[in-house]
Amino acid sequence: MPTNRTFTMIKPDAILDGFTGPIIQQIEEAGFKIVAMKKVHLSAADAGKFYEVHKERPFYGELCEYMSSNPIIPMVLEKENAVEDFRVLIGATDPAKAAEGTIRKRFARSLGSNAIHGSDSDENAAIEGAFFFTATELK
Image 1: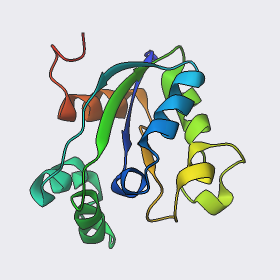
Image 2: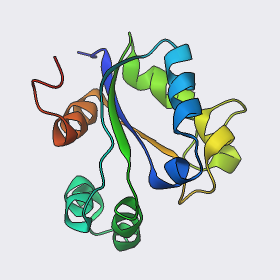
Image 3: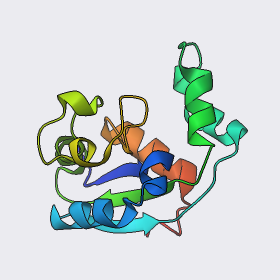
Image 4: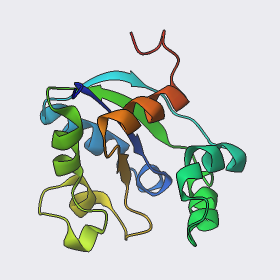
C-alpha cells in the first residue's frame, strides 16, 4: 500500500552552491510537509552503508567519497502520493534530461552532482528515512 511519506537528501554540491534554501522552498511550494530534517556530515563508512545496494557497481567508491565530502541535508517529507510526486518534482537523474522547472534542472551541476536524492519506492523511502532518523524524530 502506498504511503504518504518519502525520503530525500540535498547533496553536497547543492549545499556548497548555496541552493539549500531555494530547494527547500520549491519542495514546500509543491505541497510537501517536512516531517524531519537535519544537517549531517556522513563518514565514508556511513555513506558506504547507505549506498550498500550499489557496492558492486563501478561508481560505488566515487559515490561514497562524494557523499562524505561535505554535509548533506536528509529529510522525510509528507504528501499524498509522496514518492511518485517527489520523483516528478526532482526530475531525471541527469539534469540535461530533466524537465524544465524541476529541482535537478534548476540546481544540479551534472549527472554525478545532481543536487538531490529522492526515494524510488515506498519501501526504500521507509528504509532510507530510518537510516537517518529515529522513530521519535519521525512522529
